[in-house]
Image (cartoon, helix red, strand yellow):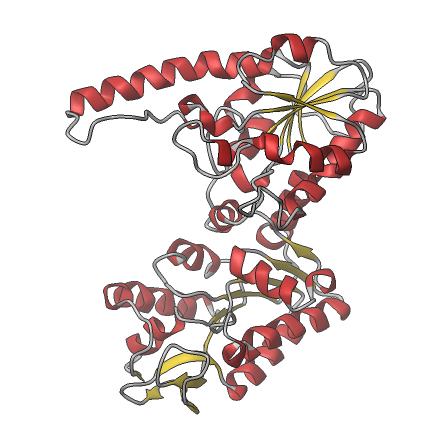
Amino acid sequence: MQQHIDSYDFRGKKAIVRVDFNVPLNENFEITDDTRIRRAMPTLKKVLAEGGSLIIMSHLGRPKKVEDKFSLKHIVAHVSECLGVPVQFAEDCQKADAQAAALKPGEALLLENLRFYAEEEGKPRGLAEDATDEEKAAAKKAVKESQKAFTAKLASYADCYINDAFGTAHRAHASTALIASYFPNDKMFGYLMEGEINAIDNVLKNAKRPFTAIIGGSKVSSKLAVLENLVGKVDNLIIGGGMGYTFIKAEGGKIGNSLHEDELIPQALEIKKKAAELGVNLSLSVQTRVADAFSNDANVQVVPSHEIPDGWEGMDAGEESLKRWREIILNSKTILWNGPVGVFEMPAFAKGTLQIAQDLADATAAGAYTLVGGGDSVAAVTQMGFADKVSYVSTGGGAMLEAIEGKELPGVAAIRGE
């Protein structure tokens, strides 16, 4: 049975909490962006304030073996500073029995990187390149069997389980999904996880209309399932960025050297057809800022999106496109934005993405619910100073993408008991 963090009695209990402390470190092992750590603090501090103790677990990077550069020992001091109490460290998360048992109310223990263990992901490691299918199957079976023991050991440290790592909720890993079964009546979401789930539910299940989705980024292939799911839910579907040129070519437009995927033209046409059948306004760029090279210093001109000259490539949405999109956005009650509409990393081609961020801020101020998700979109609104001017900025990345594809997230289902 799912509990709620605000009503759960943590007094004298040990809570094992899955967080996402996968933060960037420089060559001196200094944290260069502690956003993920700070966003987990409300949940962690809640447990301590209510008389509980903490066993904190996370991954860092994608190690395939134990490597010092991926050790969570490098972040212990900063986590202690943010939490306001000294955080102990367990060098082996499978041998932390004594440290966990000794925890007193108000104390915290951070376990070593979960991904130092193949059992966390349930995938075999160290297989020879020429391994036979039988050897691969045997290795997979072995790691799956040991995964149960790994999960049981983690669960044995605590009285309750909290998942506050939405960024890994789409993974059926030991610490995100399997462990929940060991706490049938003592499992819950943390504040960050709860906020992410509510934000996605607000746009996918409880959207006020008109509902507009703005989907950008470079390739259709990375977001095909997102487009296919959203076209049946929205009133307006704005497709921008590099992926828009596949749609424009599908319409017979000339796109020069612009990024596109010919093999996905049939799917693009199918999405357009479905939008027309459902009465969904599918809006592509009508005017494009093009360059004669993929460079901030390239020569630039503005042309109709269906008439990009040979040797030139689309780099940003033109003014006419942005005017049309702004009108759609400001007339919407719910807006989801995933992916930039230009090469915003280059200052010369950041105007379109900046304008979308401004439009969302204006729509939010006028009462619309606005959700921004996906690494590039989040980076854009953060860098451009709009993160606090929209309703919610998701940290979920791949998890959010899978959620808006309509997939069930194992980390969410495990808590809800679905």
